[in-house]
Image (cartoon, rainbow, N blue to C red; front, side):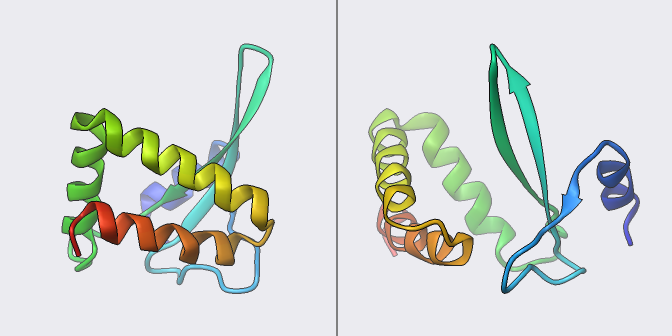
Length: 105
């Protein structure tokens, strides 16, 4: 287990639950953040820099940072999907369609 994974588990994050968790070499940890009376769920993906998906993740992050319309579309799509399913794997797969569209793929 990587030192980063160990540190996050020590801070209170938990290993992903569900029917198809990410592999140990690219884990997704779950946690919560309390702010202004609310509790927000966190998913922390630990992705090695050698992973081929890293470039696309950075590209999508940068798109959301610079493009307000993309941010609004992504937030609206996530709300729509969340209203339709409580299954985290189905939710993840459903988000992919808009992400590919926003990235022009």
